[in-house]
Structures are given as structure tokens and as C-alpha cells.
Amino acid sequence: MSRATTRPGRPLRGEASPPGDKSITQRAILLGALASGRTRIRGGNPGGDARAALGLVRALGVPARVAPGEWVLRGGSLRESDRILDARNSGTTLRLAVGLLAAQPFLSVLTGDASLRRRPVDRVLDPLRRLGADVAARSGGRLPPVVVQGTRLRGAEVATGIASAQVKSALLLAALQAEGETTVEEPAATRDHTERMLPLFGAPVPREGRRIRVTGPAALRGAEIDVPGDPSAAAFLLAAAALVPRSDILVRDVATNPTRAAFFERAAAMGARIERSDERERCGEPVATLRFRSGDRLRPLSVLPEETPGLIDELPLLAVLAAFAPGESRIAGAGELRVKESDRIAAVTAGLRAIGAEVEEQEDGWIIAGRASLPGGTVDSRGDHRIAMAFLVAGLRARNGVTVLGAESVAISDPDFLPRLRRLAR
Image 1: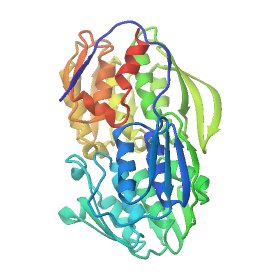
Image 2 (image 1 turned 30 degrees about the vertical axis):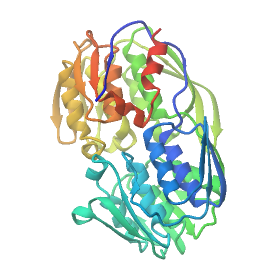
Image 3 (image 1 turned 90 degrees about the vertical axis):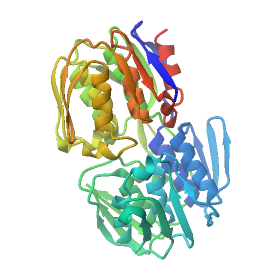
Image 4 (image 1 turned 90 degrees about the horizontal axis):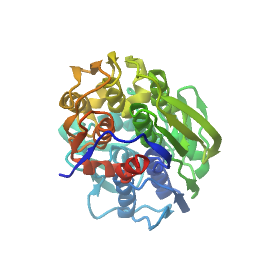
């Protein structure tokens, strides 16, 4: 287990480019495997989750050439693997791959690392059965490994019981291969990267509010995908700028998809300063250059249950910001964090207490008594990249810095995270 330490120092200044968006990269890989012909992915996320998706489609017989900044896949013909498919730590890869494989004429078994094998899959398997999928999992159908016996699927109307882009995308991947029309309705809006990307592969996806229609079987063709910068990675730069006085960072080519904007809106409401310029579109996604500057003293916040779906990945980081915002902050409705790469509610509670913050753990969130200054300390990331990065950012403000155990986990989504922070602090 490696460790890394960050300490207060100079203001963060200069320009930075975040890695390619992890969610978009994984979807491009899986759709490129299904589509006939060549799919070229430029600027894909270099982290472990995207590599897991690439390894999985290679195991299914998809040729993939990897060069610096560019991956080329030759898709359209999947074949049965002679080994278990390993999604490693990537929940997105495993869950979406179940949808990808549900209509393929062969048997597949999917698993992942110890953390992933504790994360629920019934939320994906149950709605896929509405299309006729033959899927099973251990622990009464709740947990990986997952067995998929590919079969002929039929279109259906499906209302997902949970607001999850992974569930929705798994259904869309299966529906593309099903006979007839499928309608997917989600209880709240979630990330829409799959819907935005499908027209690039030749499959228009009509949307009406939270209802999405797909007509199958769809003949997908290879596409050219230029992946914009990951807003979740940019969020850590914004938090760092908000915590370190006199910081001024320019971050180029960030995806500004409205379904990913909630953290930026909340950080601005807490006092961070954000400016947007050079707005344009890339591969169906809005993109812009963002300028992050520190503001005055941070203000506390309140997050209600209905607001959490759009913030779910950034809530640990938001909790860290709240710890440095004098006053009481409340975050509720975040029970989904219990079944992420770690129990993120418990991990954040332990981490905040370790750096001297006062926090009350709730079943679905936290009550945080923020202070302008905290002493710092040592935090166990529990092998979770979001926890590691959030507390490495906290170390830039904590008086004695923060040491994070398990810092190697940042490579899951952003291998250049620490070097980027250090370059900005020179």
C-alpha cells in the first residue's frame, strides 16, 4: 500500500488538462466493440477502469490497437471467451457489459476484484429480464460473479427502479440488439452520455423527458470519438482552488454536460469562483474552458435527497469542502455511497475525523460542523480513488497536511492526479 502526502503551500496557478472523461471512454469502448468496422477513440481516459473495459472487449475477440492518445477498435463480431471476463474494479464496465452480452449467442461469466464482487448487480439484472435476458448471479442474484447466457431479446417498456446511468445504459445496450421497440423510463435524470453517443454510431435515440426509445436490432457502425476532459477530475481542481487562497487555475476542454454540472453549481454556491469560456460541442457533448479561482470564506451547504443523483460521485469531495466551511452542513439521501468502491459514507466519516473535523455519520449522509482550519492527519483511502483524491485535496488546506494511505488507487481514474496538483503549486 503506497502513501502520499499533500501540505499547504503556494497558491495554485497555471493551466491544466484533465484526463479524458472516464464514463464516455468506457461507453465508447463497449459501443465500438458492438459496432461494425473501425472505432477510433482519441483522448480516452488512461485509468484502470477504462483499461478494464478495453481488456474485456479484447477477451471477447475485438482487435484493439493502443497508441499514445488513441485507441482503435475493430468491432462488430464478438465471440465467446474461453475465460472469465474480469472487470477489475470497474462497476460501469461490469454492469454495461451484462447488457452488451445479453443478446450474444454464447455464455459469458463476468467478475471483478474483491471490492466489485461486493457491489450489487440485481438492479441491472432485474430490468434486463424484462427484455428476456437469461442472467444470474451469486447471493440470490445480488452480487458478482454474473453468468449471462445470451439469448434472443424482445423490446419492452421498462421503468428502472433506481436513478442510475449504469442501469439505463445496460438496458440501452441490450435494447439495441432486441427485436422491436424498447422504452426506458428512469425515476430521475441521470448521466446521458450513452444517449448522446449512440447517434454517432448510427442509432438515433428519441428522448421525451426521462423516457428514452430504442428500436432494435440496430446496425451500429464504427465512429470517431474525441473524448472531452472529465468533469469529475476537474472537480478536484475546483475544490483545490476553492481551498487554497489566491488560487487561479485554467482548465481546458472540460465536458460541461448538464447532467454533470451539479458539483460545480454547489461549489459556486459555497463561494468558489467559476468562469466559462470557449463553449462548443465535441462528439455530442458540450465542452468549455473553465477558470477556477478561490473566493472568500467558504459557506456551508445543505443537500437534499432528491438532489443527490447528480452529485453522487462528487459527494465525498463536497463533504471535504464542507469541513472547511464554517457552520453546519447537511448531506442526505446518499445511501448509494454505501455500495460504491468502498462504503464511502463510512470512509468519509473516518477520514474527516482523522484530519480533525467534527462530523456525525447518518445512514444516508453526514452532518458536518465546518471550521475554517483543521489540523490534518493520516487517512485510509480504503482503496477508493474518490476518497484518496478528496483527502489529498484536503491536505492543501489542513495546517499539517494530510497523508493518504492507499494513494495508488487514484490510478483507477486519473494516474496524473498528484503530478498535476504539484505542477500547479510550483
